[in-house]
Length: 106
Image 1: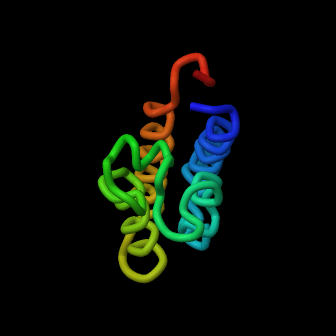
Image 2: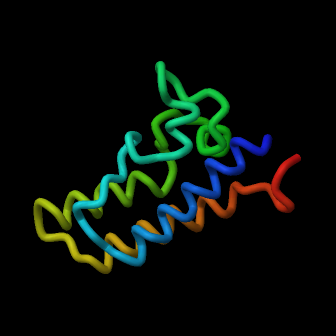
């Protein structure tokens, strides 16, 4: 992983840590607020994104982001709980940590 991608991954981890702490349903968690998407998802496709490399899917499919999105929408629009959203956001942060290379840049 190059230094630029590592920086975007670290920024994404920090973002999800903040989301998990706040539990704010108004937090934007779509691609427009994702440092990794800023690098890889503009112009169509997610090629090179470490999330896509880990899940083999684009748009963060098969990652904990899907549960975070569902929990955030349930909290904002239906009968979801802050606790469920915070847990889902924490799971996304943990997933991102898990795909981060040990020692950083390869």
